[in-house]
Length: 60
Image (cartoon, rainbow, N blue to C red; front, top):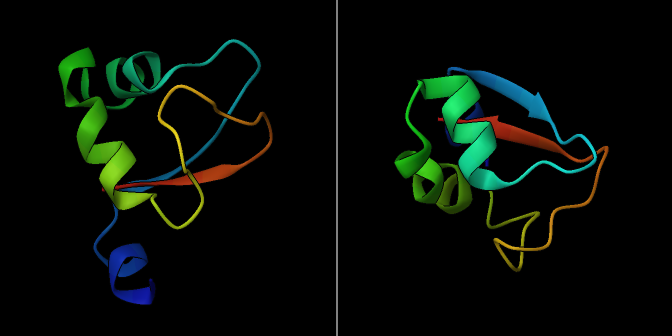
């Protein structure tokens, strides 16, 4: 996990009503990159459709 953090562009704290597509759009300007966010955060996300507000994600 530390290697992922060191290679990360940053972090993002999930807000109510967020989706991975919305987070991807905010961070990359491209909502289709949501899978990269999901893959980098499998240690905290089990389902890409169930995000818990307050959880901090690594943005690769």
